[in-house]
Every structure is written in C-alpha cells, then in structure tokens.
Length: 71
Length: 241
Image (spheres, rainbow over the protein chains, first blue to last red):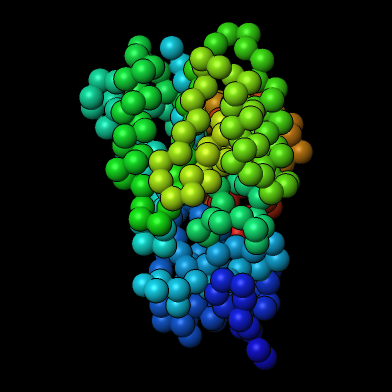
C-alpha cells in the first residue's frame, strides 16, 4: 500500500493522523527518526513518525520534512 | 509586578524548542536578578497550509514577577534576537498584568488564531489597543511570530487553554494517593474529570503513568479518567493532538 506522496512542503503521509501502526512502521523503515521535544510527543510508540522532529502536522496528517533538512 | 511573556516562531528543524528557549530565557533573567519566571504553557494554534510553522504551530507563554519591566523587556528581546534559530521568524509579546484590566480583545485574538489564518497587521492592531501595558515586537525573518506571541498571551489569559510544559511522573510505581495528597506532592492545584467536574479532595487516585497538567479555570489542573473502577491521571501518551 502506498503511504507517501509528494506534498506541498515535504512528503505527505497518506494514512493520516490516526494510523499509529503505519506511522511506527514508517519510522522504523526510515531510519532517520529523531525524537521531537517532549511536549510535542503524543504517540504511545517511542519510535514513530508521529513523534518525529521532522514531521510537520497538517490538518489531516503530516508531511515529512527530513529531506528538506540541509537544503 | 506580574507580567506575561509569550514567544513564537523561534525554532528550526535542528534547534531547541520554543518552550526550552523560554525556560532558558527565564532562568537567565532570574540569574541576573531581573525577574522570576513561572511555569510555561503551550498553546496550540491553527494548523493550516498557509501558515509558516516548523512542525506544530504552538506558542509558549509564562508569567513572571519583576520590579523592573523595562529591564526585563530589554533583556527578553535581546535574548530572543540572539538565541532564536537561523531561519526562524521570532516574535515576543510582553503584557503587564494590572488589576481590573479588560483583556477581552486579547482573549478574542487568541481564540481567533486557533480557527482562522491571521496576519501580522491583525496582531499589531490588537496590540495597539493596549498602549503602555503591552509590547509586541519581531526579531528577525518575516517576524510572523508576533501573531502567535500575541495569541499565546490571549489564550493564557483565558485561563482554560494549553498544557503546562513538562511531564509529571509518579514517584514510585502504582502510587495511590488522594487528590489532596496529589496536589500537595505534585505541581497541580486541582483534579478534574474530562467533563470538567472537580474531584473531591478525598478521592483516591492511582498514579501509574506520566501525565501532564492543563490550564482550567485559571488553575493548573490534572485531568483524571476512570480505569478499571479507579481514577487515574489521564496518560500523556496516546492522547491525540
């Protein structure tokens, strides 16, 4: 199943805000997970895109900005 | 005198967070004998594609006590200008709290910033309604942080918005204590259900997992939920943004 597509600023996570398993799996596959500040981490899993510093929340999901770092 | 300080848009993907920067700023102000800062609250603003936020669009606010508003104000602005991350658009709002003041326009602006896209001009026009007691300034980049900074002050003034920065962790596993004991031991002033009902002081709580306090009725509040017939602090993890 396709979980990413090109977004307006980064890669858009297609499963949305309520897909904890997909977000955890995506973070493990990515290998670039970087935990966000404590006050911004809500997901139960430790390693998940939902808790990653490089996710930028959108209304329905988030965009991964990792590729944008260093540009 | 008491003041509110709120900052926004100070970070980038590699920097410390805005909440940390505010805490560091307050610690430095206290070291210099300028002010004593209180707890920091996080206020969620609108998530919208037309808004330039780094990852979550929230602003950070704290109350502080000072004898010299001008010195604190000068220090805070200088600190922000020199510590905000490269590429950020920092803004800071400082409000002197006076008894009986009408803050309705500020509260309205804060709530508006959670529902519609606002411009800097909107923020400055509201700020102008508070001459002599409110300072709103930008310190680099587009300066759009003034919108969140003013909104954060307004939302803090509502008394019922935002989470208190920092987790509250049980001192030991499955600690059981009454509401009165909990409030005496942890940085919380009252315990409330998710429906907004206060729990009586003799209610027992089983403290199992780290939690966070929120602001409710102008008070640092713990939200408790039922779990297997007992009251527990609402766990921080698993709660949706």
